[in-house]
Image (cartoon, rainbow over all chains, first blue to last red; front, side, top):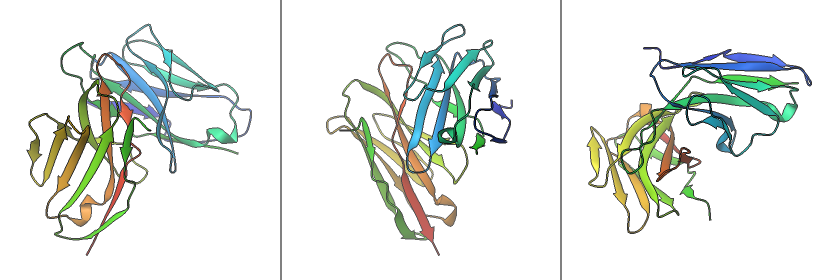
Length: 117
Length: 110
C-alpha cells in the first residue's frame, strides 16, 4: 500500500496563476483533509471531506476550493494564487469516526511545497 | 485559552536523558488522543495512541489524565534520532476534525 500520495512535491507559481494539488489514498478511508503548515503556525485545516460526496470548510478556507472526486481522491485548487499561500500543504485521511467508539488516527501524505512569487 | 496547548520548547537534552512533554486540552468532551512525530519539512507520523490506562512502546510511554485534562509523553534513554517536533492530537466526541497542538521541539545532543 502506498498510503497517502500527493502531487506535485514542489511547485512555484506566479501571483494570479492557478493550480490543483492532487491527493489520493489507498486505505479505503472515508474522511480526507487538507492542511497547510507555516513556520510557527502549526497545522491549519483548510477543508475536509467527512465522506465521499461531502466537503466542508475548515479554519482557513479562503482562496481555496476542493473536490472529492471519489472515495480515493481529494483535490485542492488555488484559483488565483497569492504570496500569502506560500506554504507546505499536507493531505491526510482517516477511517470513519464511529460515534461512541474508537476514533481512528490520521495518515498524512508527504506534502507539497508551494511558493508563490 | 487554546483548545490544545503544548510548550513549544525547544527541550535540549543530552543523549541518554529522560524527557517528558505535557499537552493540555480544554474540551472535556475530548474522546481520543494521539502523539505524532514530525521531522523537519516532513509529514507528521503517528507515534502512538494514548489510552486511558496508559501505554508503552519501547522507550516511549504515553499517559492520559482525564481529571486534569492533559496527556503526557515520556521518552527514556533519548537518542539523537529522537530529535523532532512532537505534536499532540485531541479528538472530540462526534467530531470529524482532530485538533492539533502546535508541537514541542526536542533536540537531543551528543
